[in-house]
Amino acid sequence: MKEENKEVIGEMMKFGVKTIPAAKLALCRSDYSKYVGDLLDICFGRETLSESVLKCNENHTSKTIVSDEGTINDIMAHVMEKFQPISIGMVRAAIRQKLNTYHKSKQRNGM
Image (cartoon, rainbow, N blue to C red; front, top):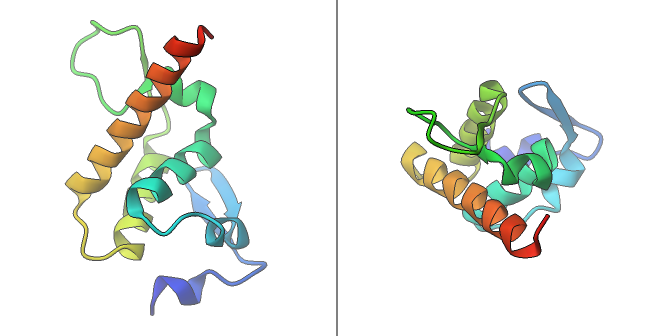
């Protein structure tokens, strides 16, 4: 069953503890990197993302770890299914890039 068949108006899709209308997902972009950014923004909000990292091995950062790992895993699985044949590494790289972009944007705007 293709992902497009799942995204019916009125249907809800769950990412961790966040439930999003499938119609809203249908409005998201077609490039996987931009789609990841849209999903992160919907699920977490830009303020949270600007202070977050995907994973952190040491406590030498002022950022906080994205706390809802279940939501991140659900987003990665959804994006890999929708944009086959991309790998989990490509999705993780897109997530890291978006987190860095939000953080740099926050620093530039002096928020």
